[in-house]
Length: 335
Image (cartoon, rainbow, N blue to C red; front, top):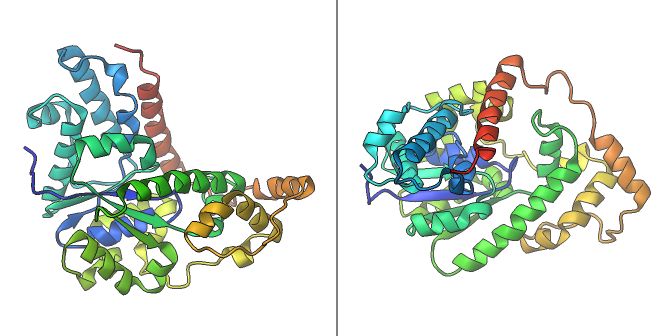
């Protein structure tokens, strides 16, 4: 049974931009649950047509089975567990949005919370689904300097090398995100935070976030790293390891010493228009990237990931299992 008083907040953010950090901060609030990301909505909302008429028992059960399989192959750890019977008996309506509500509200209750914070990548690709099915939803927009984001992308074991790809993803996410800001401007339903100010002045930014959500600020929010589930999830994946630590107040502008001038110049040439919107100052006003510079960046940024950065066998197995299920969903024959 769903709770109409439950507030649902969706995070708009590029990968490697602090999305897991802000989710854990919100999860440390006594009223808000921010579970590890499922990417459930992104996976299914754009592929619901594959399941045909959900009034038919066969189609409905196949959808539910696929959802359960994806949940059970999630990257993080949740307080709740799910099977097909629990979902079928828990919803009052045969549609995907009802399943989403059920799963997240049950997870909130299991954690003793009332409200939900949902992190999913590339929300702009399924924004209509959210606006139609969750008309009271609010949106938190987190943005990070693309030069640091691309550096993090380059060093991540799951985004090896290729700062060019990271910059392209950042640009597309901000292009669509800026449109979303325009759509929701003046509605009181969207709040913008810059990663740099979050880590350098956490209490001020989190207090502003609480004002937006309409809840009281709790100092415990900045002690997110003490939460048992946070600790377990931080140990589960290398990309989440920093969640075991307090806010790192100097964790920005690292690109200045970790990226070459040619790499920075290429990122800026891709992202310059969106950087201006968020007041990120360019290092290179002259943004002409020569073919020679491009080839140097391409060669150097597709570097070999060090042994320490590579995911271990256990993590690789978790990711491969999940990817196999997602591919099965995306390639399912039409019903």
